[in-house]
Length: 297
Image (cartoon, rainbow, N blue to C red; front, side):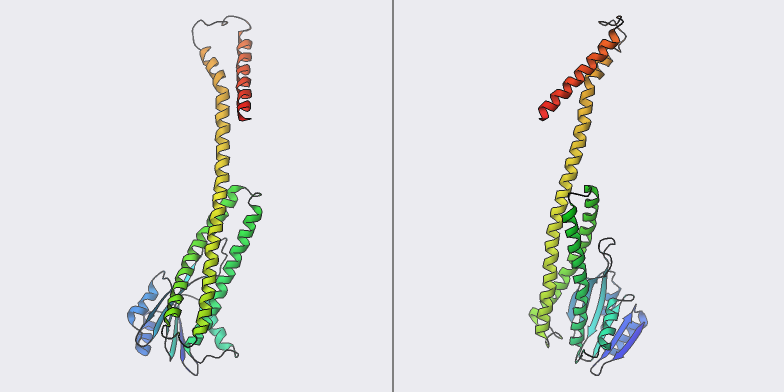
């Protein structure tokens, strides 16, 4: 679905699930290189920025705002092609970016003298998704901290493994986002020069998010090691209990094996032989038990 909107200073074209006709239109109308448009078909693309002769090409990869603790994190790619006279946004399905653009255009308080200012407002709004996920991670870490000695280690470990998987993907995504804008700000790339102070502040925010995620990763790694140690101790206790039971039954098993042989054995023909052997079995087992307890103490 293609939609063209007009600002007094430039055209805004948003395309949802673009097809070949949309690519032909954009290529012919705005002289966008076909190879750049074809990148949209890639299933996953890290954030990236390139400069062409007549336009700039920016790919933004950002997480979808879903239940971070119960669902696998999904990454969405949005492709921007922009110059002084046009701003093109390509997205797959109903993207959050399309809603952001509509909200910006409908807000009478926002002035859009150029495409750079529009892009700044879009990216600034996208950071709300990042902050929302940060709050979710922070809440989950507080939960783990309060319940690490209360809940079963297996349940805690499942939560930590799922959280860590999403966190690694989120961290990788944020890293590429940060690296792209670090290069843009430091090198004062084309179409990012009018509002350098705004982009420097934006870069600081992305860096803050990235550093927070690295800190969270270290904390979660520590929790995971603690839980794994608890699980390992529990497994060792179970192995010790099984070994103890086997050890206690070794003497009675040996005596029973000996008196099960079809040969003449001492006391075999006595009336009290069974009770005497039974007593001897219990006596040796109790003796072993006492020795093990004493050794453990």
